[in-house]
Length: 592
Image (cartoon, rainbow, N blue to C red; front, side):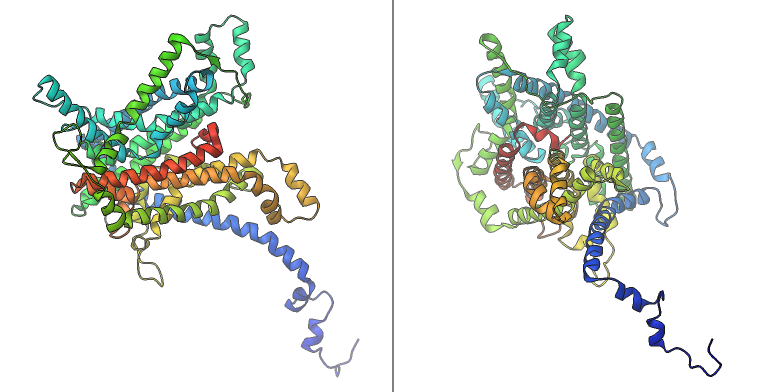
């Protein structure tokens, strides 16, 4: 022991003391290799945190904000008075009922067409089957807004068909083919039936042929096998497609407005929000949007619950020999498909003629031809096309940056919150575009720090909302490809010292690039078509092609709107051709 005259230990000696927990010894205890290893472990966690931050900021927060606004008054006090006012207004109640009935009617109509076409393409062989299989996908490449314009040119009161009927039959009054709820149902059905077809084709490919053979071996006839074996086994894919058809119809306000239908929820949400004068109507627009989101979530949960009731674990991809159709049966199949496609291509014919025609008034066809309208939208006002390509391209980049890691988390990890992440990704498909557009207006109207402007005043909000709207397609395309890559391949790379990032870059990515490409192209193609959310957020100079089409048509410049529609169809058709080339019949997974 030292005496009282012993000098106290210096700070340097304390820093070198064994077992000392000071910062000096801790820093010295880590080698550069350990620091690199720690960084490699921290980076994936940081990436997961960034993904959650992105979803919380641009999905959860806007939806939470719109629900908050719906249950509070002007002073911020909680109240249900807004929903009571909605329930007591007969017009809004009728709009709700009409929206639900229109959605159900569209699901029923698309189901009949979708199932029939899917069965013909998968189970039977006939002349032109391959061509019909490709042409069946065409209606999905353009938004209903373009379709409704084409129908008004051909089937409108002064359209080609009515002009011919008045000339041939001496009719005085035109026939109302499209104006009204029946017209909305027609437009939505002919646009959305490929969603049912794709999902049912995908589901039929997963049915083990031995199940139907077993039913046949005990005497079940073809129709009974179809009803008791085949149709129930297509339930997961069909329900996914039917839900998307319902939500798409439920949230579309542009098509009803063009056809003069205002008593629908989506139409009322749009009209109440854009008027910017009556605060009560503006608040009711927010309430309607919150109600649409709530109903969409209920429909999603009900659909998932229905699918979960039964077990579909026996499903596996298998090739079933097609039955050759000849004679009358082949003629009926070809005739049915030709009739459906002829009706589906009516809007394309109308848009194409209007884009190059002049003097089309009370005549079956335009009286003169010109490229002037294309010159106006491509040369004089190229902002619509440039903006659409720019915003959709950036949205795809965001989708890949966020969607591929999400797919990896879902397919390769057991991280906490994985199920919640999957649920959020599925929820995006159910959120009406009208509601998400209004939610962004409410959530991001405050000035940002250091910028002094709200996010709604910056053009970057458009790629962000497009990314959120179309993220599930990239996730599903990547996830489906990851499931086909056996873990042992990645484990083999890790066993020879490859890091996780290098394994993904050199082994996994080359094997899943097709799925990533297909999902990204679907995100790009559907981003080009997005109208519901973008119409609320596009300020002057930010307009996309759908916004331009809507604006031109409302302003009475139908030919310019048609020219933009043709441009949109061409770009989407090229994307679809690439998707079909890469994915083939497995595209149903994008919607399932």
